[in-house]
Length: 357
Image 1 (cartoon, rainbow, N blue to C red):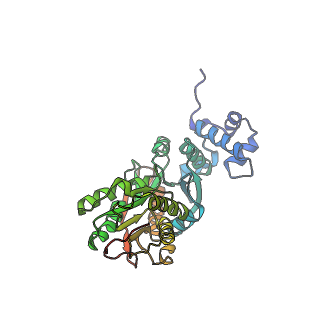
Image 2: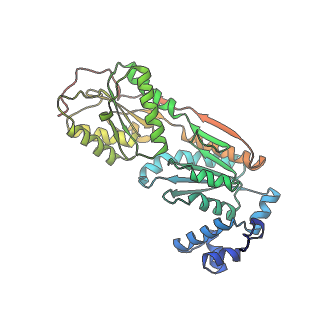
Image 3: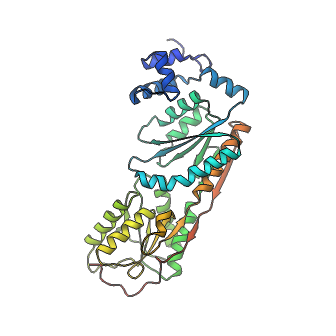
């Protein structure tokens, strides 16, 4: 059997042969040129399998003359573009500022996470582009991406996954964020609470749901399984999920006087569904959103919301990536960012419940 080439001896021609394309096409695919998506995928797969490092990239990595880092966001298959833009814009702005202060360029790209070989493709792109470090935000409960990148010694900073095995992590304390919301309900005297949570398999949604159950138990608040509803992160999905819940519940079933929403878009959808059915917030139930993006101030009433400092996350992640560039792939650091609660008009003490039909 022919021995596999080592990273140092793999040539662009080897990648081209494995992918079944010309050397010129392979070069275009690896460097962001105009090639078909399927062709680019084949070339990236070939480069990942061979662990190809371009000659210029290898020289940069040896000499330390690296001036660019990468931010890659692996989004969910069900992500909604407008919610992505509102949530991730502060993150990107912070990362750009952190990179600028560190005198580094920042390459930004959003990628869907359906592919099981996303880690290998990221590694191939990293080597082809000679980035100094990779900042990765992966929204799904799939550690395979991280494992693959670490196996290839890719200098990595992981965002918003405090349980990650990566050496460098910048994350939001989601347990604290949920606790702030639940504590607010307890402060106002609510006893029975509900939650329209995020999609199954989404890492943040799972972490928040577990924290919700735990904090409610600590505060002596009641949560019934029938009052925990799954939704995608969108106004439409929030309205549909909460509307179906309201329509299907039995008239004699106690109605939670306080609800936490997976994000502010879901909360906006819940307000729509409630209004159509003659319910008002906070008269009929209190409501707290999550993220505290701009829409939280524009709803009726304005939403109390858990504020996630995404700008700070992006900024600190860029600084961590710069430290990796200066100190090498063995650099280690973990930074946990604390959320806060933005109080507005959507929470009040419970009153005698009215019919929800």
